[in-house]
Each structure stands twice: as C-alpha cells, then as structure tokens.
Length: 294
Ligand code: GUN
Image (cartoon, rainbow, N blue to C red; front, side):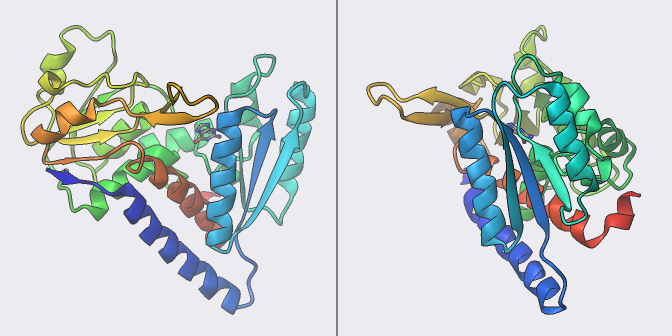
C-alpha cells in the first residue's frame, strides 16, 4: 500500500506557484491578489481562511480578508461583492461558506463575476466544467485530479465510483474524471449514502472517491483489493477529553481499508492541502490569463 502524501505534493506545487509569481514580479507585474469575504467568526471558517491567507503570503500573493459581522444584511453583502467585482486590483475572490441562515447562499454565489469566481461555484464555471470549456474548476475536485496526476495513477478506462453527489466535491469530481483528458476517460458511477446495495458498487471501483461527509463511512468490505482510495472527507470533531481541540476525520475507516489498497490518501494530509493549492492556481490563472474566461 502506498500512502499518497498530499501535504508534500501540495508543498511542491506551492513552491512551483511561488516561482511563477517571482517571474511575474521580476517582469514588473503586480502579484496575484486573492480576497476572501468572511461573515461572522465561525471557528472552522476562521481556520480555513487563515490557512488560505498563509498560503497566499508563502507564494507571494497579496491577500485581503473582508470581514462582516454575522448580522450583515444580504444587501450589504451584495454591495461588497459588487465592489470586489469592480476592483481591478483584485484578481479573484471567494465568499467563505457556510453563510448565516438569513442569507441566500446561491444568490450570493451568482452575484460574483464568474471571471473572479476562483472557487468555481458560479453556475457559469460549473457549466463550463461540465462542457470541458476553460473555467475555474472547483478546488477540491481539481486537487483530487492533481493528486492522481502527480502520483502517476492511470485513470484511462478505469471505473471510478464517487461516493457523494454534492455540488462542491462529488459532482464536479465526476465531471473531471469523465472528461476526454488526463486525468479522465473514466467510467464514473456517482452514488450516495441512500443508494441501494451501495457496497456492490463501491467494491467495483478501481478508484473510489469518498466525499459523503460521514466520518469512517467506508469500511474494508466496501473496497476492492488493489483499489485507489481518495478520501475527501473533512469532518471536524472535538477531541475527547481535550476541550477546545478538534480533529479532522475522513470518510474512510483508514486503518481497516488501507491494507487493501494500492494507494490511499490520509486525513489530514491527503486531499485537504491540495484544495488550497487549487484555489491559488485558479487565482494565478485569473491574474495571468484573464482573457481565457471572457
Ligand atoms: N467552506 C468550506 N470549504 C469552502 C471552500 O472551498 N470555499 C468556500 N467559499 N467556502 C468553503
């Protein structure tokens, strides 16, 4: 069994991005600039945003965080998005999710100029990804595809089962792996926790992608011998007996499943670090090739 070291691969890729930024600035151009809109003080969101800002600074990007109180109105948030859409010093921006219940998340996403939507959540980017057109791919699926690429895992003609059908990970991952490209050219089955006889499907996977959001859901009997298992789960749970401390849990029962696999990603240290890399790749693309998406 080979452990896929997402942390190391992400660090290598961040180094490559930093070198590209150096080349840009050496030519007298300004560095890429990512803005993040953060509403309220949700602990997990604060951590994710701090990680994104740190990665930006490590790569030489400018990073701006625009904060709003948790009781911000939808109109105030829309006004911020309008300002960021028109601000030429900002190449791309994201609105950290989840948003408070009084705000219509989809309305906010659709207000973002798709040419600055480096999360790849806008319907134009989602549609372009499905059509194989230039776009900002959603970060986690792009991170998964990059991991497969960097680990030289062949996808051609393979059966890939994606467990989870949400719009952020499951569906766009299926779209990427169905493309006529590398990684791609897979036969893809998308299923969810309610799919009857689920293990009959998952056991047929050459590549199993777990994105269901239920810790340790994938057990050994659900996995074929020699499968590649990619765990996109990131459930944050309190550490028993350690108040205020949390640990990330994947969707795969790692200790039971790992011995059966050809390759597997751990949690943490697998898909997670790749997500930030994808966000920075999209921001670099927005800064250097804006015409690609017009
Ligand atoms: N919340 C958790 N993950 C993400 C992400 O990738 N993008 C945004 N905007 N919010 C998130």
